[in-house]
Structure formats: structure tokens, C-alpha cells
Amino acid sequence: MQVITTKLELTRQVTACLRQNKTIGFVPTMGALHAGHASLVQRACSENEVCFVSVFVNPTQFNNSEDLLRYPRDLEKDAKLLELLGVHFVFAPTPEEMYSKEEMESSFMFDFNGLDEMMEGKMRPGHFNGVVQVVSILFDLVQPTRAYFGEKDFQQLAIIRYLVERSPLANRYKGIKIIGCPIVREESGLAMSSRNERLSSKEKQIAVAISQVLISSLEWAKNDSVFTVQQRVVDAINAIDGLTVEYYDIVDKTTLQPTDTFINAVGCVTVYCGSVRLIDNIQY
Ligand code: AMP
Image (tube, rainbow, N blue to C red):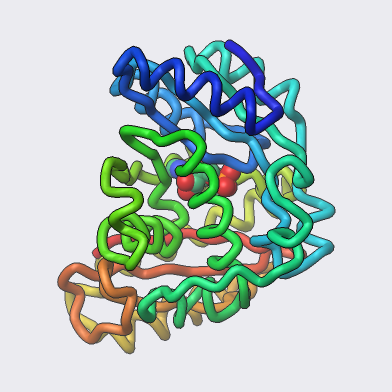
């Protein structure tokens, strides 16, 4: 496995792979890797001849500088795991290598066709512009055959699918297949996240309730309306000491617009556990 830190070297390696007509699997990450990331990487390695993983904490997608500062980073540990998983190339640039000064400062604007109006897009202004900015640069560099994203970040996955399949930029990325991968959970049910590292052991126990309430909501959905289920989820999580719901929205899986039926619906939740912001979702 080779760790690459410059765009020039990355382009050299990608060009060599493309010359040999090799299929390229790609997993973009922000590091602090766990079994959730590993599941994407394993799939990328098994379905493609070469596997590239990027490890880059993207400053342009953080709307909170404190969150960016506190984001866990351990490239050495990540590289060891990626090597064990059979990855061929890790791209781990500095922000200065990834972006020109103008790119770093200018606010990249993407038209999301309404997909960013709800949930994370609403709560974290500019977040998805930063995500699309970095993903489009990475796609241009890596030119993957398949790119792997987790359903844990459901809205992000929907936006990347839109970018590649239906947006005005779709033509540029038409060779890329976007693969969505299921949420990997701790045995307790807690969705794995790099941010879980910041939870105390007591908070980790409390946070288990998030997935438990989401699972209960599958039962509630058999009799209650979408509106009632939303309310019940919010009330049940807020009733637990130490948890505060930021939003729980049940939306259409493709358009991410509010829906009043459970057909093709996903419920996305964001919960503060102490100062740690956790996200999870459930498909109805
Ligand atoms: P991140 O490093 O948080 O940017 O995540 C990189 C990729 O891993 C994204 O596509 C995430 O959706 C995915 N991912 C993160 N956590 C999980 C999980 N628990 N299960 C499945 N995929 C995940």
C-alpha cells in the first residue's frame, strides 16, 4: 500500500491504472476509521481491481470551527487498518495541497435541486457545498469506476447520487457508479461514527436509546401517521436524560422532501449527546 500526499503523484498512479484498464474502487473518508468505514473499503476492494481511499478532514464542509478542531485524526492508525483491508493507495493531502487559496476561501456554490433544504443542509449551512466541492475534486482526480458511500449519511448519499446521476455536472461523472452501503452498528445498536470517540462510556450507554427508539418507530408506523411517529420519536428521545433531538424528519428517500406516507420513506435524526452531535436514520 502506498500513502500519497500530493495530487501530482495521485494523478500519476491513477493514469497508470487507467492505462492498464483496471477498475478503480474509491472510498472518500475523513479518517478516524472504524468498522463502518471498513465495510465500504472491503466492498471497494472486492469489487474492483484497485482500491483508493482518501483520508482528508475537509475544512470547507465544517460550519463550526470548534468541531473541525476537535475532529479526531490518526493517519498512522488509519493506514495500518487500510493496509490490512487490502487497499492499494491512500490519498492523505494537507488542506493546502487539496485546495488553492481561492478554493479554500471562495464559497463554492452548488445547486442541490432542493435536496439540501432539510435536515443537515438546513442545520449546517454550507456543509453540503463543502462536501460536493471536495468530492468533485476527488472524483476528477481518482476517476473511479465505483465510489462507495454509507447510508449513515443518508442526505449526503442522496446528494452525491444527484451530483453524478442527474445534476448539470452528471455528464462529467457519467462513468462513476455510486454504491450505497448499509449502516454498521455497535453490538448495542449505536451507529458507528468517528464522533463516538468523543463520548464518555456513560454517554455511549445513553446514546444507545437513539437506535432503540428508531426501531420502535417501525412498529408505531403500522398504526400512526407520519406526523405522529415524528412526534413520538422526538418525545421518546428527549425523555432520556442527556439526549436532545435537533430534528427528526421523515422524508422521501429520493427527493428528501417531507412525505405523509411511509412508502419509500426514511427517518433521519440528529441528537446531541452532551456536546457530541450524532446522526442516525431508519428506512420504513
Ligand atoms: P466520514 O469519514 O464520516 O466522512 O465517512 C466516510 C464514509 O463512511 C461516508 O460515506 C459515511 O457515510 C461512511 N460511514 C460512516 N459511518 C458509517 C457507518 N456506521 N456505517 C456505514 N457507513 C459509514
